Length: 228
Image (tube, rainbow, N blue to C red):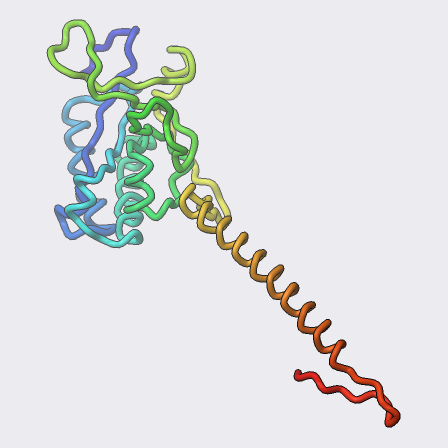
């Protein structure tokens, strides 16, 4: 592993399985320690990317709460930083992040690898660093299908991201943005409320006018015969 070709950016990823040791913070630490031991035994060079791979497979099987999954990932990231001297990247998909991570922005300071095989990626939780757009690519010298990703920059800029670096989380409260489904529901609710208010005003006006017509004038003065 200590040898490398200057034309490539290299790294390794861990397929995270929060169900293997009970989930939550302790499970994240155990998995990260095992990953770090493997990397250190192999000899990690200075310029080397590490990823934490969060997919439906590992999370569906676990069936833990969003809070447990966030605690798991936070512990995994912390141990990797302490043991390997660099912050990991996060590999995931929009649906996975929405369902299992609650669309949290807790990890938005980390580079994102967005797995999305559509012609245009769906809005990820934060801007992607790599967009994995297919699992059926081909590379000379490799038999079978290969995952292919896109990086919006030069090879020099990509190599800069390989440098060992501890990325500081964004401070302060960070509220997750509305996903498209929630935004649509919110917009529909606003429309319904607006229609209800308008309809209530219209009905109230008509009732008021009907009441006015029922005011009969007599020699005894005005007499209101309408209801409330």
